[in-house]
Image (cartoon, rainbow, N blue to C red):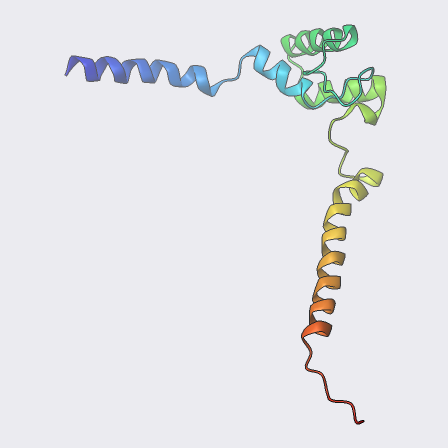
Length: 128
């Protein structure tokens, strides 16, 4: 009985620790949403460039001051422009980037259906 109680106590104490992200988890999460301005194809979380290290430190400072994720992302967009965002915004030209794959899929589906209908249509014999 005592081992069961100890296991349940350990689990109950561990659950809040897993539920609340640490400051470093939050920094890493936001850094993954930002592209490194001086690196090609790397997020701030992936890069070890001087600028990426400085950006992670700035994220950490702003989180410690109580700023939200949205406020921090807005700060970096103000500093570097929207190209610093890892995912394009879902408005304006960014909306076209989000919708382009869906539109391409729809066009491909229409072309495929028309082709299959043409190929599988019974052919009428031509008089000779």
